[in-house]
Image (cartoon, rainbow, N blue to C red; front, side, top):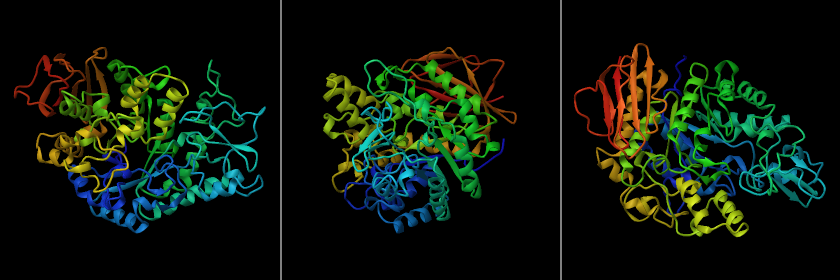
Length: 559
């Protein structure tokens, strides 16, 4: 397996609006990030993925871009951005920028022109269609609820928006669109960035004709996923992007790819095919969703998680590469979702971190994860800012008469604003995030959970993450070793073996609040030393059984 810097890296995702505000306007900014680079250096991360900071009207918090080559005024200036990049590189940290090219903002100059007339030279930069029988061109539902089509009176046609109606989809069939995008990517790479995280990049190729989705009784708009997820020309487009841009730089690329299977991910990430380095899979993020999607809550079964992680670990081994994550700006907090954010917050956060960082792949830490930040329960829907949450609430409560309590519970568990409350730096007002009024409320638990407290406590989640990151740098087996699941049917313990160049690691994780017994894989593994654990552990090495306390994790070296 070829060794590369991005396989050996640990990535930290910054959601700039909520990270650190340097000027007191309640919104995180670029100078705020510069102020905290030493904090990140101490943590040990070597790559920062920065969520969008481009000019945007902010309908979807920056994922609706109106100018790809300008910085949003709320975040600062291009001079601030250039200083941020220089300060990162000075500390030997690399910068990955978000690439959002499935859609733009409807305020982007291209779209402003496109909607003027049917014969405008930018018309074909987007996907326009006449209506059908007085209705939308097809029955696709937007990812943010309602129709994926918006009628535009100026020309009497509809444009496609798979997300917000202020996010029209670009027409990748148009060669000029692709050329403009490649030029823009080259511009950023020439400024010195180290790669791209590509937003819903597997949506860029649509099936010609844009057929109707399969009807669902009682639903006006339905999923059109099979006609735009991993579409017919997706590999052609990504290969072309690689040839025209990516291959000319030593960079890291990761594609956000909802609906991509292991078999598809192999195609996207096989170095021989020259597309991307790795993809974000969503399968493990859907295991606690019922048949009606993410807001339909159901408990996670550990057996399902084991089966899914194992499928990806073994499927991509030796072919492509995994990205490892349990939360991000679109997902709830990992300790609230997969751990126990009450009695065992510290123990379960450390266990989940160990489970993830000991797998094969590149780990991603989302801001605040390293101090064990939790989900939030705002009293009122008025305290929420996320367009997905607000659209869903309107559809289910206001238009659909569903019980408010049930819908709010779904928001508490799965809402994207769980990840977007301000970073908790200390126990001063607004958690030290801002001297002004934060754009979204701070989680009230910031007095107990904050970075200052975590850094002062040698036994904190923060220092545990530091140790995990350092271990990864010291032991190639953690990066490159193969993976084997143990005790497949165990509903409480997720245990696996890693092997590399004659070395072996045993990783054992108790995913429950119970004390449980784990039978050692005698004959397959003999422990020689303890590498890391989240509880104090007796000196003698286990021979036959391990008794694991609630959310206990242990990693042993052995042979």
